[in-house]
Length: 529
Image 1 (tube, helix red, strand yellow):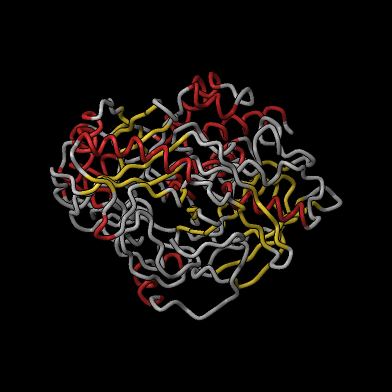
Image 2 (image 1 turned 30 degrees about the vertical axis):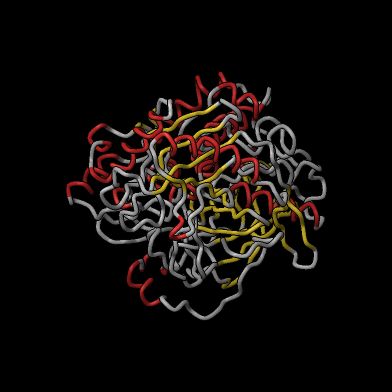
């Protein structure tokens, strides 16, 4: 990983020289160079961000008759069945990463340097942990693995306690989100196809170790995956594109459902390249937001102030927490309580690689996940079948995404000297996750007679130095009430993963974040406060 620092994510670049590959980006994706419509000076409601929690909140507000302005710092990327809109994992360019050049590996496989641009994935370093999050209209729905599953009751309750009813989510809100996002497991014909040989091998290997793999639901449009297999669409999902976006819409991302439905009401307008840098409350009760208007390189063109009657923060765990901590520490929102910035966790994430599978993979690996296992023999943990990102040829590697029920937590700190907020992560905060997963990972590899990691390229067996699931910082029931209303301020809400206390119980967080957003906005609209 890149060199680590304690504080990060607070700087905002002024306008600078165009990236080296700017002419190519203009040719590949001219749409993101079009001028953006400025947000209105005042709005009835502003939603900051456009990921799962923000998109759901925007739609439900608009359907209830509220005029909604969505402010998203990233670009609005198009879809095309044959054009490569996004970069890919094994040969990324500036379209991949947000305000960051250089090499940003995930599993440890070598990657070429990139220029600095307004790409769709932001990576920031915090001690021994790098945090991955989206910067685009549609948020994390564009850049995640597509897995959307609910945790089991015992793990959910271990995290949320009595703050949220598991029965309420499973009877009403999880099913609602599943219907809206058309969640389903990988169909048999796709599972049997060549690009998912690694998925079948993964299942066979965990069975040898005594586990029974269970199918996982995904947000994938399986008909588009079939079109890729048949040559009717440019290969994307079947060639390991996922983390940096699927150009053909193979993932049924939020731009195709919740956000589209919000805009269809005529009461919701989405404004890309609008980055909120501070929030305060005026004497009349309105919220005033300082907004940087960006160009496609993510450089600042100008700044302005916009206001709203009600403010819904959905900039993700990192973005929402950083805004609130900065507002409290600089006196812009002085009544925010001591729980703001606390209770942040990485969902116990790690990437795992088993090396030199004797079966051979047979080519590039498809990115949708087919199955997962849970191990409770020592520490509760899960392993999900995953492709190996950045694997352009058959290296016979098998990948997993691991999650551990880990109590390690960090907190956000304000640095007055740099006027920025960063994440303080314990120095050895990844050790528990790494050791817990290594024991199970090694057992699976041993039963199949293979090794772990990939020594020729110095790929670690367990990489716990990153998370794509940042959670917490404005925890439900502590920084807010039990429905996301921020303590100390009327008309201020948190609607994203910042509400989740560091873990979603061995499950990818997107479904739980979405269900909480549906639950919370329903209560807010019903109670009109």
